Figure 1 (cartoon, rainbow over the protein chains, first blue to last red):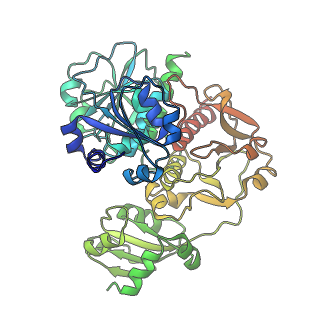
Figure 2 (cartoon, rainbow over the protein chains, first blue to last red; figure 1 turned 180 degrees about the vertical axis):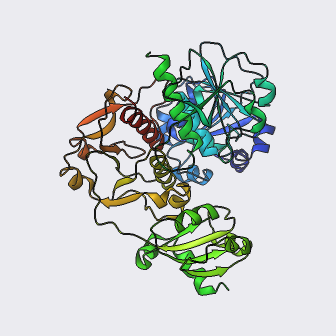
Figure 3 (tube, rainbow over the protein chains, first blue to last red; figure 1 turned 135 degrees about the vertical axis):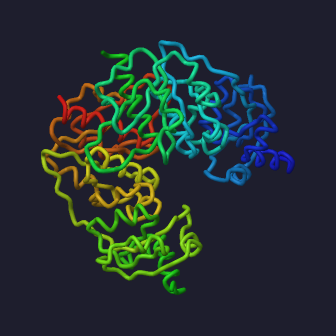
Length: 247
Length: 247
């Protein structure tokens, strides 16, 4: 039975302030809930239709509530939710270690939740699992972000921090896309480093430019002024793995 | 002076049925309106703030109406519009010729307007200006599509048709991404061809698979099940141009 208090609690988690207060977030849709259950997140509550709950492992340790499709879709403000919803506890990272033989993304104010979700999904495709994000970057636990990751949220570590303070201390190469950098097709990315992705409107902040050790450029053959931030991330990551695993 | 009838007319163009009936569409935002004015589209009406209109060429042939920022933002349902809005006449393509020395995209039911807009912007970056779209693909003239193209709509030709009937007649190579195709890094795309991009949920339709002459794959090093359609487009296009202009 889904009480009014629970409905209110779940809806409150759409707002960052309440997520922070409760240290909880919502995952919607059967596929994403399944991914959540195989991840390291502590799940506190699962709402599912009869069909969904029938397939659930009996070992799942969470409060389980059977709901109708109607109840689920009433809880979902931005997508049609098919058969499940879960509440899990946030993990707050106090730091993230990037070793010299791996790549990590550094997100410089990615504001759009859809873009952040797509960047996470893309990073996960290319085997990049660590993200350092500026404090102005969209909240990882925003339901729109979780949804756009298509389940990849479960495999990514993200750490929000002041990027200038973070980058001043790194000894890794720091790549960033600029208009007049080295052609990304000809760049040898080596075995590891940080890839800075700039904000949707203004690109990489002026205050971070001095930390970029390797300016790169995605070659343009047409006339668009710029690429979407998630698109640029994908093209850079594809060139990184093309070099790292094949040359 | 912006009459109630004009407000009603402009708002009606958010709906496909009325766009079709009027053969007109709306472009929002100063940058996009500027791109529109340098394109081949016939512009029938420009709404702008005092500042925007001051910079307008006196040669512009369209009805010009000075409006306040408030009036503009009231007309925009999905974005904050800064200083301009235009109405232009649609161009209905009765066909599109792709020659053997160029690439074109073939969109197999791209449903999301944001994805379509991002695909158009990405194609324009890579110098691909022709798109053949299935009839189920989102409408090019949807304001969300126009907005997501970031001005690239002005440089792209798009033709909606039955893809099976279109592909059966082509003599060009037809590339499409599948899970077990040839590594896109090692594919020689030659000088031209058609690149089929599958639907967001189901990929390339079974009914179109027989027309694919070259199955390709974006290599995966992580665990995401799939890539967003616009992301896959970008990675494929980047590999196409890397080969076409450099090897």
